[in-house]
Length: 319
Ligand SMILES: O=C(OP(=O)(O)O)[C@H](O)COP(=O)(O)O
Image (cartoon, rainbow, N blue to C red; front, side, top):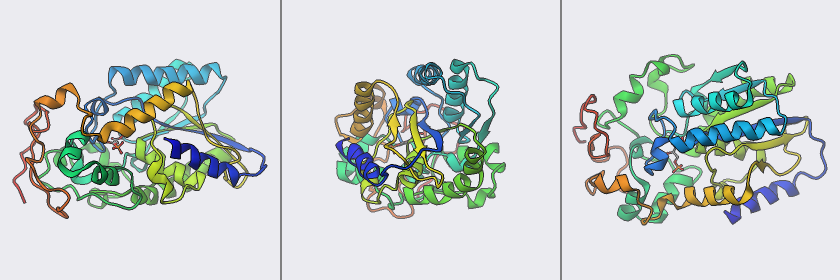
């Protein structure tokens, strides 16, 4: 958390006294159902939790009270990001504002780790390994494959037939670096032109798609981005000069004490003691599978072992 401030200060030191020409809001959606369960959610389409709905509405009230008038909101193709945009616009009384969706703002694809519980992973593989998987810049987790219980749910979903890449070219696992590489063309080609037209843009993204964007905009180094963690449901205001360089430190809007507590909560998700009530009913998700050693093909799991009752997807069949 301290490092987050250092990154911001480092960016500020480079900003000298340039004039702000543009503003843009970047925010991670409200808390999702699996955030509460402490599971890697990624491309699984979970809804907002009750708290997540409240967070999204609170963001809208905050921006409305500050007098902001949005012109366009960009979201991922995932419901928690879109729902956050809707609730926020409703709270602002600006429901008519266009919402534009793109897979390029989707959360980082966590590959074979999708569905797993972070605290349990830390018990099995060590906190440091889980921190590396979560926060390092260029580490890519083992890819998802057809034996994974969420594979079909993701890749058979009709929304992914609407992308500017055909389904077979969509990612099967991503590092943060990969996220930035797929996001930057959309930022440059679609979002920046809107901002240059004078539109006030809000991006309702995800923990890691927003980290990738902030890394790019704030010039955060590969080493320092490891220490940047974003809370849910907190708008970040970024002011940019005519060359899209930041003119001042980005601002996380809202009650600063609550924001710091929310960041700490996300950081602590990979502490072995960070168990949720539901996790007690979940058998060891990889049945002691060694994901550290796995490169291509981690051990099979099924939806029941990760606490999901649906049997609509074929169980994994092993490697
Ligand atoms: O789905 C996720 O993020 P999201 O809740 O922002 O969509 C990831 O599981 C976030 O996990 P991380 O905080 O361990 O990178």
